[in-house]
Length: 366
Image (cartoon, rainbow, N blue to C red):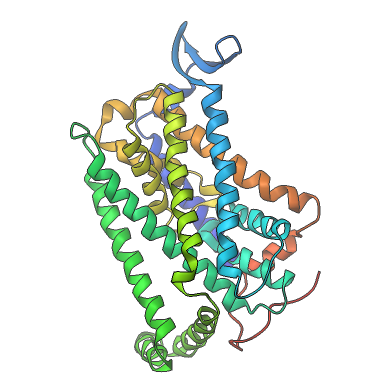
């Protein structure tokens, strides 16, 4: 029942953002022409009444997809420093777990796929407690949030003065900064404080929901046990460096793709667009991020109606999404189709919770 509600709600969220994205008729103008692949010019283009309404260079699409492949490698690689104190995972195994996990996060609603990577890790390495594996994912997300928020504010400072940025972007940036800083402080206190902090949080929850206090205390105790197994920040310079490289390449890839469409977006704008996608993913997402991805990607342009009305801009947004969907899905799906990871295992992972015993071992089995 819970899964059905999540999927139904996710579909509704996707439908809402599809409506918000194309309520001005951008999709109609995009599809009005006939599509052609011109090998002589190396372009994929749309013609309407004999005129080219939009075109994109094939090498730009290839370049963007190449960036996504490198980004995948960096995302897999940067998990290793966090896992090193827990277990040594061979590169091939780490790639398989990560590829399937990334696919699940992108395709499943409400980001329930975040539990897939730690769950699969505990099946490959039964000695690793699930809370410890889950803690590495939370640390990744907080590092991602702070890095992207910093890039957002830096990019807003570098944005040309003649470009009007929607006030919504500023609100989203400050909201994200507040959220990730609060999460950082909470994780720090949870890691450094004794059980008194956890009990205080549980009592606070108990005032709102008496039956939920014990469960919250159990979850926090298990998660704190997981955090205890992580290395110190100073030993994770490689993790932080890879994180910065990963997000920098993400923004660069969008810039490469935008130039392929002939859009004169400044690099700072592409980084703002990337950051808006990340902020948008903080809300419950739709299955496959349909609607939500390209809505938040193009949100920085909402203050420039003349840009939003261009068919090339809509085509750019849908192409960026399609390349993300192709890369995220295909890299993980190949392991599912080959039987390396069973679909049933993914279903188990999305229902996983921190076990009653904070030091419980990961579930074993094929």
